[in-house]
Structure formats: C-alpha cells, structure tokens
Length: 484
Image (cartoon, rainbow, N blue to C red; front, side, top):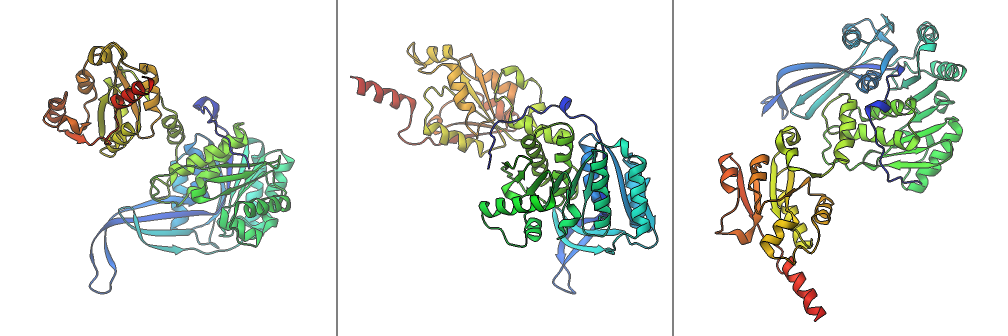
C-alpha cells in the first residue's frame, strides 16, 4: 500500500468547468425543523414544535449539486413520479439552472421522499415514502435516447445507485457500453450486490459495507481488504476501485494494481449523510480535470471530510474544499501588518501570549497547549534578537529569531507566530485585540503589559502555571556547568 505525504498545490486554475451527466435515483429530503422543550403526556416521546420546513435533493440529486458546487456543468437523467415530490425535485433543479429534459415524470412511479424531524442538529425521526420499482423498457429507452442525443456533450457519466430502481442492470450495461464506444469515463456509486451491474466502468465506488456485500465475506484486516479489492476489481473489470472507509479515510486500487490510501483527522463529525455523494462528485471532478489518482483521492477525501462537519444533506463547495487546503498549508509566521484587518479572525476566540522562547523546551509546549485551550486561535508574539539583547544581555539569544519562529510554528497548538521589535508587545496587542491574554503564573502581582487594553475591549487575562524546573535559564546554566 502506498502512502504519499506531499500535498498538492490545488488552485482554481487547475479545476476547469467540465460537463457531467448524472444518472440515478432522485430523492427529496424534507427537514421538519423545530424545538423540543417537553415530553408528550400521551407517551414518552419528545414534542417537536414546528418552525420551518426545508426541501433538499438527496441521492443522485446530491451528487449533482456537489458537482455544481464544484463548478461543473451538470445534466441529470432519471425517472420520478408525477406527484408533489417529483414536481418539487424538478423545480429545485430548474431553480439551480439544471435542465430537467432528461427527467421523465410518470404516473406509474412514486417519487422518493425522506422526511426528517429535527431539533437543533439532532434527528428525532425519519419517515420514508417511496416505491422501489425497476425501470420499464419505455423508461429505460427514454434515458438511453437522452444520453445518445447529447453524447458528444459530456466529459463523464456518473451513475448514482440508491437501489430504488432507476439504476437497473439493463441501463447500467447500456451506459457502460456507450461510455466505451464514445471514450467517456463512467463512474459508479455502488448500492446493490450485483457485480454484473457495474462491469466495465471506469471507476466503481463502494463503501466498506458494500464491498463486503459484493465480496461475500466480512473484512477485518488491511490484508483482507486488499485481497477483496483485487478480486472485485478483476471481476468487475473496472479501471479503478475506490472504497470509502469512514473514519479510516479512502483507499483506491488503480490500473497499475497500486493501492493508494488517504485519511483525514476529522475533529467535529456532525452528520455523515451525503458524504459518499460528495466523495464521488469530487473524485469525478478531479479525474476529468487531469489530476493523478492520489490527488484525486485526496481531494475527494477532503471534500467528504468537510461534508461531515455540516448537518444535513448539503453540497460542499469548491471554495470550502480548497479553503481547507489553504488552512492546512497556511503560513503561520506572519508580519504585524497581517492583523490590520479582521478577516483572519474567522469569528473565533483569539488568545495571545508572548515571550523570548529562546531554547524551546517541554515547559514551553505545556504552557502553549494550556493557552490554546482558552480559545480557538493562539497567536504567539516573539521578541526579536535585538529586543532580547536589550532585556537579557549581549549573550542572548542562543537561537536566532528565525529559528525560534520556525520552532514555534511547528507546534500544532500554535496558529500564528509574529515577531515584534519593541521591548514589549503592547503595539501588537493593540492591533490584534485578543479576547484572552495569557502570561505565566510568575506574573502574579506584576504589571502585565496590555492587560488594560484587553480588559477595556471586554477580554480576560489568564495566568498559566509553568512546568516546575523547566526554563531556558536553567538549561543554559546546566550546559555551562557541564563545560566547566
């Protein structure tokens, strides 16, 4: 298995608008939102006081909207009922500028409606109204004719199977054959235990549970996972097999029989609904824009990781995904002028501390980690070399300001590091306007520079205990004693 550490410098210029056709099961996700403040006297159940109703597209519609949010030109082909949910589905597409010419409305089918009753970010109940029905020959022919009419228009075809009947075996086999004939990549999102449906696709994407279903065995180890993927890729005859693994990220087996794996450390998982749709959409976007397999997988994983931090069936925009890249790769070492406007604050609670940090040791790390716990963004002001010489004498600092800045920027708990040239950080504190000012506990009963500024702005001052026996001065003395 290959683990690649380098990150791609993804820019908007590298992601162009391509034309993508999405075929699949369309669903209307309806959210009844309100507050719960009491339990029903009739039964031990919560009483939801209804405040708002939202309609969003799920299933293949969510894939389409993720592609749209990623800047692509999207078309849709499907069959829905000629009912309230079907009409709303078509209306939502039209509102987003997506043609509904490829959607057949029929009296012989019920549109899928998933009603969720929600309080805050918590689902209390989901009620489904649907009819699972395989496409008739007429419905299959309608979609096939639509595809062939505009076949030279699309760069990729995506089949989103939610096992509601639209993505039938017959339709799948026709679509993959058309894809091969016209050299168009066909991507599948798996749902059913039928290998024949997905044969000859360019990329097939099951999750781990779906992989086990297709393989016929439970999978417990990485070795078993790789074995299953090799067997299935061979049976399906796809170019690439991509498996989503939840908290373990994603893995792909490509044409070169090479395993690629990516993972994302997700801190706040609110809702996994729709994450697979997001992953599929972004791997499509990446590959039709010419990204290599690893970086396509990485972008898809980053997009789905962004989705699970959001509640409900919602698409993830290209701005959000690339913003995560920029945040991960952001330059932590900044100039004082960086803080002149408030765009960097992101509405977060700002913590500021300062010091020389000459010889960085475990006491510094403990101190900074405690400081970060007091807010969301930790900024560390660092004395310049000249200011340290004025304060501590000509033999200090031991480490240059460049080295000290780099070391502090390497701490995960530190968000920004900024050099100041005066003897105190007062001007820096005035520019940053922190919500929290942190100093060491040895400042008890001492004047803390900037305290008046912070408290005037409604902020707080905290004193944090140092690790006993750990200080730069002690380290220098120990080195000097050893050299005598």
